[in-house]
Length: 107
Image (cartoon, rainbow, N blue to C red; front, side, top):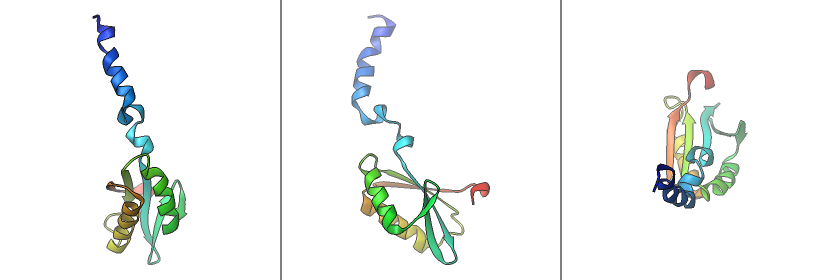
């Protein structure tokens, strides 16, 4: 078998797996979390959404991926906001929830 043919079985196998067919980053559920005037505010695709909207949107995405990404100002966001969002995302079906701090220009 030549070099080109040796990859054929691997390529066929890869096309059958979700990880190879769909990049994880494109399917991941990305939201931003902040506190504003004592209220917890979640932003999805550039607009602020209610907790009920987060749950509805997240349920659709959780069927495709089990990973959510939350960007927040970690030092300034109250724990009640973080815990509330974690709970909502878990209810939607996410098994993995990652947190990262927003860069100063996006705060």
